[in-house]
Image (cartoon, rainbow, N blue to C red):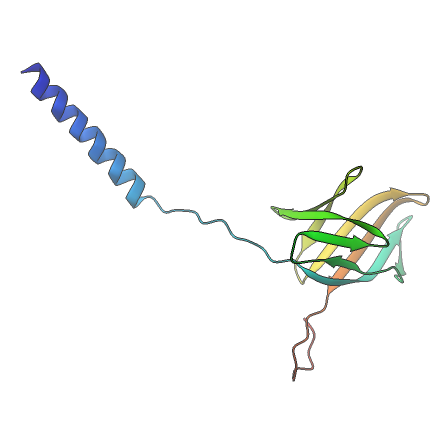
Length: 128
């Protein structure tokens, strides 16, 4: 009678595991497409917002980026875009409205650069 009872317990465990696997909602990873050309919308230095004339941030489809001659790779991790090359690694914050905010310490102290992607389709005049 011991082997019959063991078989019943094993069958219950297998049924419970199958039920859990098939009935729990499966979380699918969302792949965020941030590739594109981002123009510098504003810069903040020493607490003052100034007009930005910096070179654009270009995020390519293949996971590489260009910024003022700096080239490397990027990937999206949560609400951040991580930019890196062989020596430097930094993060930029993703914000609503196709914006990326890059903060770093430069010769003027803490600098905050806001880059904005402008998406325009043929036949539409509105930018988003």
